[in-house]
Length: 120
Image (cartoon, rainbow, N blue to C red):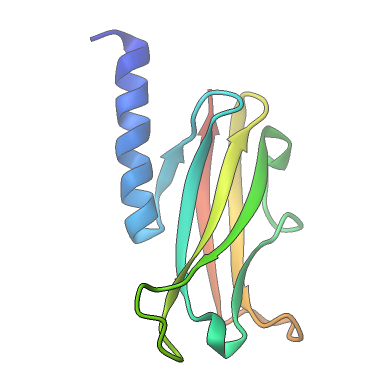
């Protein structure tokens, strides 16, 4: 196995764990290829996950694309959903991405998630 293949395998494994547990570190893909971040939430309550570049670090190495939320298969009122973002590497380096769970009319998040990213 080449070093490049090993890094890709490790990055894929770390991302899978991050997507499920939303913690730890994700080794992002090469420039232009994105990694998906999924955060659980409940849009019917008005809460949304928002990327917060003001408190994130290393933001010049990544581009964050908000993909919206994926409604559950059984769309009952109050059912949880998954909010998704894509992280694209634009230059080599490390980034600490901060996501806040809040309502648009409130300034205080009820939950915050930090994700460490490495762009090769």
